[in-house]
Length: 443
Image (cartoon, rainbow, N blue to C red; front, side, top):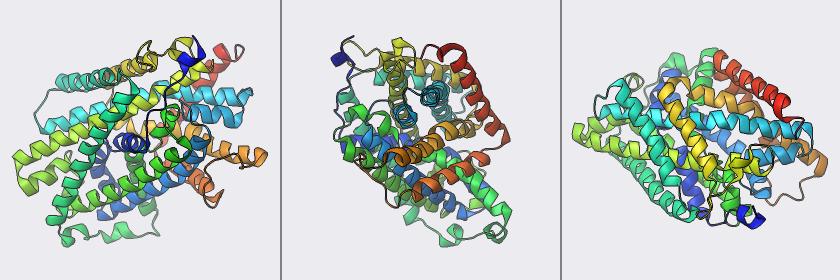
């Protein structure tokens, strides 16, 4: 295949980048985890977990911004790890392979978690049977694959439309909460749970932050699409910070709106807390409409998720570090269709096999070591050896944001729970075995 045929067109501007980040971040996540976040913190002070998640996201975004602006290519973290640790070194090849190894499991898990969450929230609309829920989850994945099977220009336009639906629904929720806000409900704290010198408080905050981080994941989606972003040296960092700040503001207001209408003791037990919120204010019929909009949000997020992840195996295949077939672009529409279809099919299978509660912590535990911590440490090592003059975007107060982010990610990793920590480490170990058994001598 000619080199010109391999290049992805830079057609996405700042608005499309922000839209894709935001709809990736705001999926079914905040609606399905909000109750458990309140439960872990045992009171309305659970807003601290949303703030903690936003803070970690902003710190980590400084790492992604430096790397994304310097290396605006398809693949995001795959490219970052490869370049930071050396594309011709064993550690660079191994870490970049481990990123792809994890992506081929973790990306479908993210896709499946959103589809399963979609099908579970749909229970508010109708009492679907177990197999009907599975059929809904699988259908969601297949429809998203079909919608993404097109040129990137039309995808960018559709992303803005979906973004308007996402923001509009959350603004409606927040506005309704403001008009019906009860300070007595929103600020009635459980004093025992407010003791910041207690291990219980910090354990609860750690577990709650695992859930909120699941809802923030996606702020870096633009980096996976780096080869398709116009003026990447400025648009990649801007899109991430705009997305995180905007979503953090909306999440915090959404939290306050809900606990200002529903007693937190009741909210933490609800499976459909947002639907219950609308039902208390407007009645059941309007709550059905609101639930439909929440499902549109969930669908929109999965649309952005699959779009971004489909570029990672493509980048690795171009680099010779993955199967060659994944480097193929569609002959007329110019997108990595083999990668898109493969992740979509695996996501479809996972959506039929797993439960939502089984995948959220596993998703984070699997990614933290290699991706988030790996590229943060790699940035420090690279700058120590080569300096920072060639980076078009530079973080403030370097290296303090990177160090804090690494420590915070370690805390989140331990907060995922023993079984998920071990699961993440086992996945890495298996990837190392596969690499040295089949690929090391060929690379």
